[in-house]
Image (cartoon, rainbow, N blue to C red; front, side, top):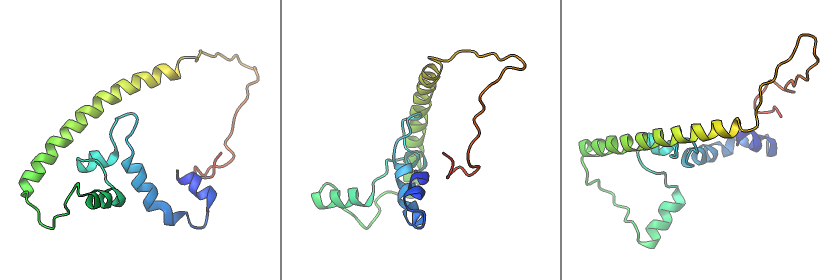
Length: 132
């Protein structure tokens, strides 16, 4: 993502970095089936607009006091993290197998003999952001 933003606007890409990082952490990973935010905080991410919409629609009330003790909160978070970890492990194992099957579907073993000419592809830049 950063690569595309830098290509479009090389002078101001750093202003968009916080938004890119939030998007990257909010979107579920295809391998694990859960977002980075969920693994870190134990719940799904909700952006400022989602919270504002829920508040205006009356779905949630933004209370200023906390009704749960720190110990209860940490215990609940630990349980949620264990559930997310188990779910991610199962999903990752399934996805790894499907990725391997898909990648190896049309692959074949190639053998080259000494003196045979081969085509070697060399990257045009050592910088990962500018490489094509």
